[in-house]
Image 1: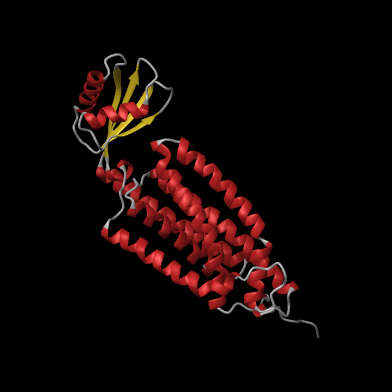
Image 2: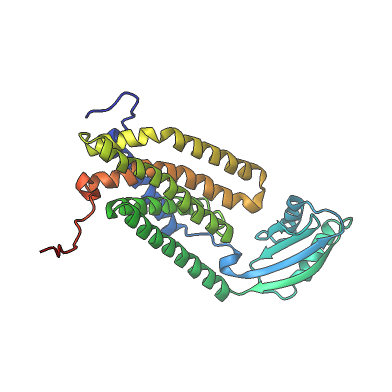
Length: 305
């Protein structure tokens, strides 16, 4: 190899990285099979109760009161101002709203809660949301495949798609393993991870393509090592700043944003890793060459006599 000074030999450990990737992917898929996904009320159906307190409500205290009253599966969220609380439970009981309000008033009579509305989301609606979410993910991956294939070349597109699939599997595997509730906010986080990882991958791909013109005598592996090293500072700056913002959400966002934050945090780390050790490695497997980047000859017919 002809590695320039200051270049990190990322691809020198690609076989070890692939083994680690394969192991983590199998663990994630195994968790899907044996533990399943802990779908939230958005997908399974349930009852949502809108409450209004006379004074600002403490969500953690409300949650503790509901658990003590026997509603351990209740999801407590704030909406509107500090006095409005939304409680969601997997139940079809039409009297649930009154029962919950009564239980909360017994627990804390100094700050009574008033029921403003009770809505029930049936399992059929939840199933439709789940199907639409999966379809949205597939359409997003299909659109990315077409975009990268059009902008670069099909070998780049395949590398990008496999990288994104890996990221989604790892994120879903972590959620499944720890049985973190999967709701619409977590689905939004998974889609955001796909966009983040794609952006990181395209930056490296763009540099690889440029270096094919500049480093004419370099091998593909040298090109990838140099290109990845050249974009490393940008990758680190982007990843670290993003992770710091997500960490703030994770520690200060409360239970409502916990699943969203975890999915983003794991996804950003997985996306940074896969941009280097999956997307690039696929280019090596497919033996990307300069000829792949040469546009096809024009089919115009010379009509001159």
